Image: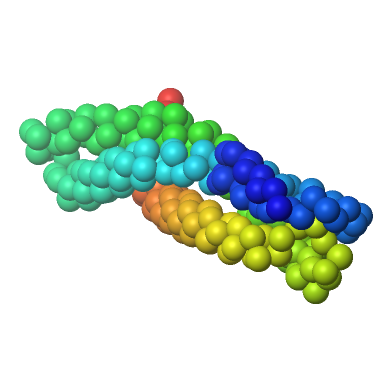
Length: 217
């Protein structure tokens, strides 16, 4: 018997072979698929990790948008209640104008990046479904065949079963990370969509009150 260890970026693969037996074609195909499933899972993990990186920054920036939105809405209501002759009215007017300008600048910087990241996120969802289907319909049925035809194999199925179980644990970790990524990005997108509606409402009220506050933004 010969034990072969492969240092894959995802995890170390350890298999054992009976070299007195010639590997049948289906065994060779299955082992190629076994390495492929490691490649695909590692690619999935990389995409998930890359996708999660900007999420905390987006959440922080959206909190900043919320703060500006709340401040501007309060200033507008304050201004609407002030008499035209109130000596503080001009100051509040300028404060509102600055807040609206800050909000507009923040959105102009944030929105394009969030749109780009959202496109990557939605494309990942389609990609993940395809990977899951390949594993369930192609890869795992091949692995199961190894156990049903173990007498024909040079591969030690006891070792393979142990290694496959370790791989399943690794895959479960990757899918857990994927779940966190999907939840986090969905939250970011939903939160920003909610704020977008509030922003449109605020701009409508500001324009109705004084369109000069919107012109040039």
